[in-house]
Length: 86
Image 1 (cartoon, rainbow, N blue to C red):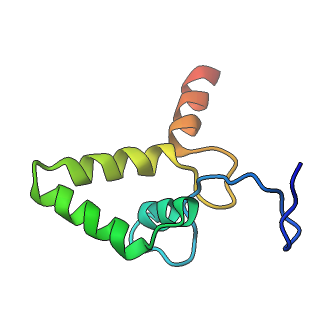
Image 2: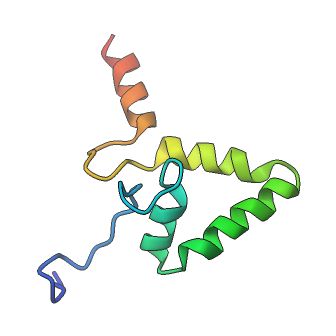
């Protein structure tokens, strides 16, 4: 296993960070994970909003599927686990 200089392992995990976000943290999480500037990702979502309502749909799907920072599972996993436990 590779260890970075800050002591963390080399594996990245896609999460919605608590800091640096405007709404649910999807763009900030994607930017942090991919290494792309968050402004570019936000602009891409805005462009997708203008062309066919794709931006909001993708954003909501990502919000449900990407876990929030500090949470072990996503919103979708919580819903599935709750309905499966009944």
